[in-house]
Image (tube, rainbow, N blue to C red; front, side):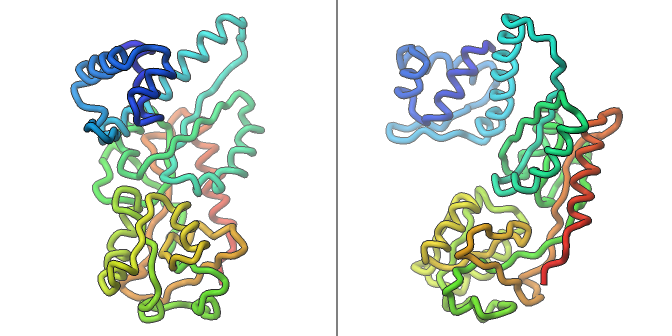
Length: 300
């Protein structure tokens, strides 16, 4: 495995098009195809699903993506440090998040962590919760934040930060906006934006299914991310059921709690990691983010 092969993989993963990737890498399309095939042979699995019309990352491809980015970044940095005779200390700290909205949870924590550890170089990786296990075991990431999921590997530790429900997200001009809480019945006649099964937190899937089962197909819209679901809500396509932990920042959107019911239970949100033993940065990160959640005021 060479850095060039990995760079070819990342180029194809970015464009999902072999011709455009080859152009960026300044090689022919057959050449980049050979590089990918050679890499797949060495790894023992397919990284892309290919047809005459579509190129997609496989599950293996998604998993390898984080490692590939880390390896290329490390190699490029090493070359630059050597050429510039840079001897300053660098402490890498890799954090996994299941979606980009979680980045707002890290702002204050990372600022304090930088003051405590000036040499820290945080790297944020966006991936679904089920990918946390392998990435933490392979030490591609140090710690991850997200919702607790089924079948957590025994080698991982989990620390709960908060139990949170899901809430109804709607526009301020929605008839639901005047309600302090909404029930399943209240949401019956409104179109709904659902997160696709490939991106939804596992905790959300059963609740989505229950609500969607009573709606016509024409009332359902599917989104591949929480951010795009919120965009569809904002532009009037319907309402959505999203984690209460992601308070809408857009002034045109509001978040309404659900009445307690079997379909709106509390879900555990927390930290995934392997060990914090002899890892000062990890210990400080965990302490800071735990304190941040402990200081949050309960929502009315």
